[in-house]
Length: 99
Ligand SMILES: [Zn+2]
Image 1 (cartoon, rainbow, N blue to C red):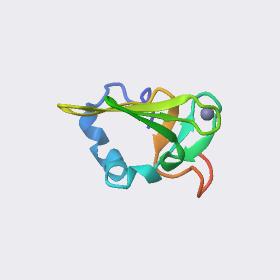
Image 2 (cartoon, rainbow, N blue to C red; image 1 turned 180 degrees about the vertical axis):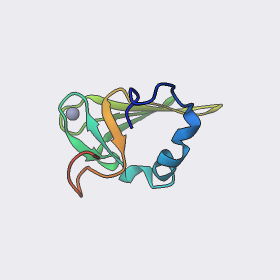
Image 3 (cartoon, rainbow, N blue to C red; image 1 turned 60 degrees about the horizontal axis):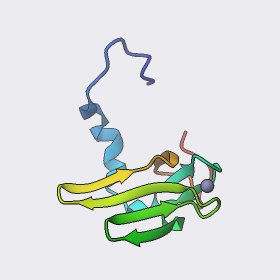
Image 4 (cartoon, helix red, strand yellow; image 1 turned 60 degrees about the vertical axis):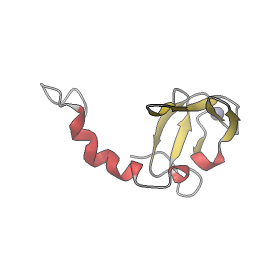
């Protein structure tokens, strides 16, 4: 399953199936892990500041910027450098990070 297992990489189309579930859910129920303090929480728990250009979501535990969401004329842009992972499962309700 890892990138090193296959001699030739696939193109991004192979991610359609695995990511379909992520994009079809209420995104606030997804969870992520803060790269700074390691806290795992649902996105709904982030402290979010709204700015004219978009939103900045910070970790409730350490204050680190988790993600920035910008409503660009060509579509929404997300930078999530403060998350070591982001996805379904994990967070407040059901334990640790996805396996
Ligand atoms: Zn944190």
